[in-house]
Image 1 (cartoon, one colour):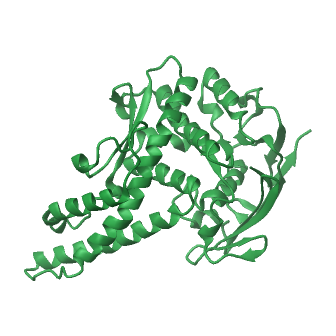
Image 2: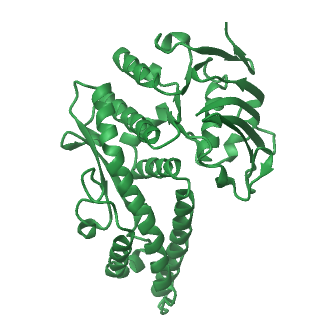
Image 3: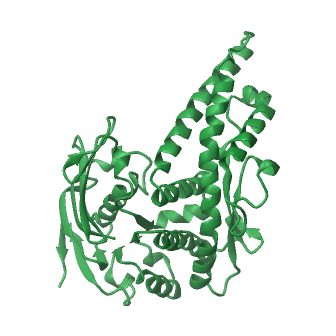
Length: 384
């Protein structure tokens, strides 16, 4: 799989950009602020329908423009598809595939797969649990696009149930009996959708863990071994072995029953606090360096290596399960020491296509030979 062509209109700093790519390594070189990261962000947006830099779409539209458009020609197993996305902040985005509209924007998910490593990824190790949950869910969708719907359904139910709990809490504090007639219905919805999401995450962690451990050992062979573990709000109600490489596959029915039992157990606390205390939205992905949590115990270099191993582990997992993803390395070589640069370059060469950004050519390891592009003054020029 590779991106043959990228065209953006009013995306970030670009009024217009048109870039032809090839399989192999493509390096975009430009000083800070010239827009090189914006281009790979556009590629990644097509694959994920989200940005690795901001949480909403509004910053993606060039100042003064009403919308942004991203077009990519994606080649997979000899077949080319043109994906067009129209980004409309405050309104529904629109998508086309081979010039034909699709009913839902998320129907384009799976046409392009990417794995992107960027300086922001240090937050996977040092940030809050939401960063790690987001990492898992994005990888779930890359692995099986139908999970975009599962995540959306769970988020919708979570908002509705939280609103009900808050309303009930307000009524109770005012001395009125809370209206809880629909709470059991929302419990059922939360447990059903939550069990699907939880089962998928557990199986993902079981499959991803060995790849993360192996890539970390390759990047930082002198360091302690690493592992990842999924920590659920179900606690001891989580069946033994779920989420482990040698454990059983997660059973959605069993997890749904466990979630319902836990929701009943903590109902009084939820009504008192007005929040949902049980479910995948409060779970954690534990990153372990030896026997200790990486957060707070890993050095700066170990934290970078762990973040890198999460992304490279994801890359290795996806490529074993189908179309090989495009590997995007956004301005990361300047953050790594010489040995880690070289090791990352060696691993990157295994990808069918690698898109690299760098401020100066000297930051890119010499092993990554391929097409070079100069990004400056609002233009992208093929070098040489």
